[in-house]
Image (cartoon, rainbow, N blue to C red; front, side):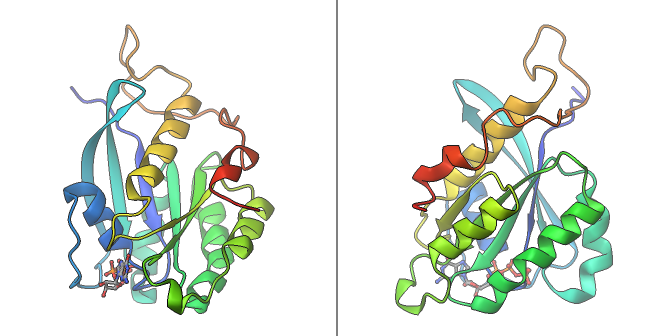
Length: 204
Ligand SMILES: Nc1nc2c(ncn2[C@@H]2O[C@H](COP(=O)(O)OP(=O)(O)OP(=O)(O)O)[C@@H](O)[C@H]2O)c(=O)[nH]1
């Protein structure tokens, strides 16, 4: 079966924990020692979404500047983008508007974006208020904001479930319809309204 799967891409500054988040999602484990990603790493995982088995692709990109040309070339094929910052490092949050701009420039027009503040296990070192992340998310019409910890497995499953549900809901064709489509495409209308529905995640 050559069905195209929904693609979720992870983007954000180097060392915010993108690889650890994907690794936790893929294997259920935390691997503290991660090499900086070179270019893009590809993962596929099955998930149960509303009682249906759905396979999704996750593309983990390098945050380092020197890989920018390579990583940008993958934006166009993504259906969803998870923008990641490190809540213990303010500069990584300040980069988010830049990452949004990159996605708007190189990504598909109807791409779904959400924001994650990783390393929520280190709240004593917090440099980014959740409220500020919510404000940014609302300003740019992002789907949701969640604080995550790859280390302690907080909100990792939730992030991918939320994104996968949204992508499936927006898919103009039924993934498991009578005639399985050979492409996964999105229409431009949000089905899960953003961002007000996610007020449970955003306490703003
Ligand atoms: N405390 C804490 N540390 C984390 C967490 N996730 C990742 N880290 C640490 O952050 C560092 C960077 O993690 P990576 O996953 O390699 O970061 P990345 O964003 O993929 O980096 P690039 O590949 O360069 O873009 C590692 O030393 C991890 O141990 C987390 O949830 N909590």
